[in-house]
Amino acid sequence: MILDESYVDQLLEYIRSGQLADDFECSAEDRRYEILDFLEKIMELGEAADEVATKVIFKNSALGQLMGQSDDETTQ
Image 1 (cartoon, rainbow, N blue to C red):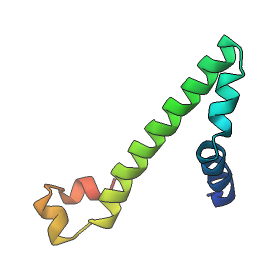
Image 2: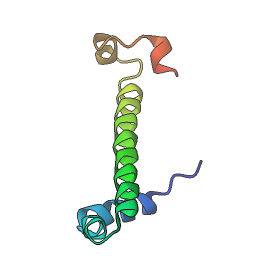
Image 3: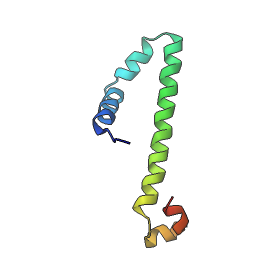
Image 4: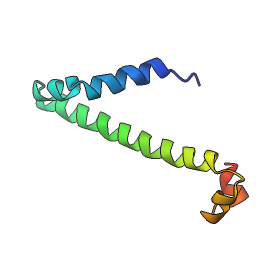
C-alpha cells in the first residue's frame, strides 16, 4: 500500500478549515448521513492508528512489557 501523506494533509485541511462543516450545513439529508458516516470512519481510523502506533513504538521495550504487551502482541 502506498502511504499518501498529501491526501491526509488535504483531508485534515478540509476538516480544520470548516469546509466540511459548511458542506454538511448546505447538504441534503442523504449527503449529511454520508458525511457523518465518513467522519465515523475517520475516527475509527484514528483509533486504529493510535493502537498500532502504541504497539510499534513500545515493541520489545521495558515500557511495553509494563503495559502488558507480550512478544506475540507486538509482532502482529
